Length: 337
Image 1 (cartoon, one colour):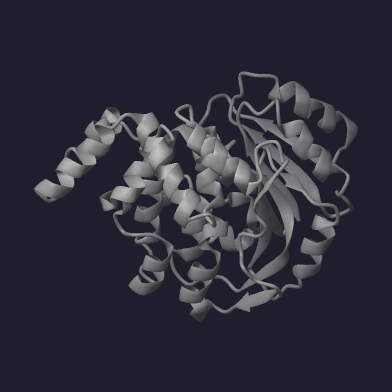
Image 2 (tube, rainbow, N blue to C red):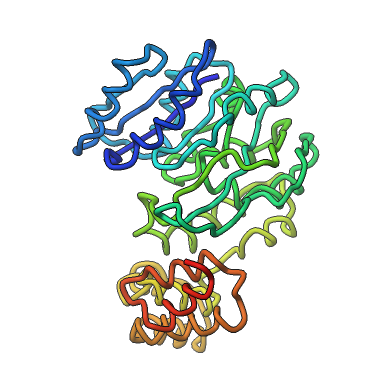
């Protein structure tokens, strides 16, 4: 197996990640790191691990080409039969590599590794597991609907993917460059792979630290739903359980992004101004874009505190927003972080 990491300017975090991986390497397991031309000290940090262990390989690109292309390139450099597409700022739990190797019995083309989601400093738990399964479960190619419904939210995090390298190369990857979710396109573009989900979380996600966080509105309002709804082999009913086809039409979504600083006049002009909508919807979407962000934050936080306390990641986002109000901080404290 090859553990494949694509990284960019993560010198402050990647060492902590590698500390949880390198000690688990063994014969037949390597670590391949593709650096998209970092301008910080990522090369220096990674270099220490390369010098200490021949199973760690580092490929530095002359220029950034995008996360999708970089992961594709990492797989091309890999030597393992399977590739684990790991992230550059999250942590493997002890024993994770051995548990994954045990799941690679030759009968599956994809293993999905369950994950827990914690706050950015790992002090609080936001989700105990992204796949709600108590026991390992398998999916046949004809189970595409069930696979999407059960695992799509976990698959929005690339680090949970362990995929047969030959399966990866048999699929169209270039069509998904720029989607930010090339792995999801590889999995669902046609016949879905024989899949096993490891129910026990083996990865700890550092939530709120993604490189794409400033692009959240574009990603979750447009890129992610466009990708999910493009899969011809999945029913519309299954897709609808993951996300709306056009979530930007939902006022509550716009209000949330206004509350955390992701939606304002610029986003309205760039993404929504040319979208067809009724006069009422247009007025509402513009009103939310013009709304004072602290007022939106207080309103969203109050709603979460009263009616959606299960939405822990939303509450956390609201409390960390540059527009956070005392209401957001109070609701976050009551939630335990």
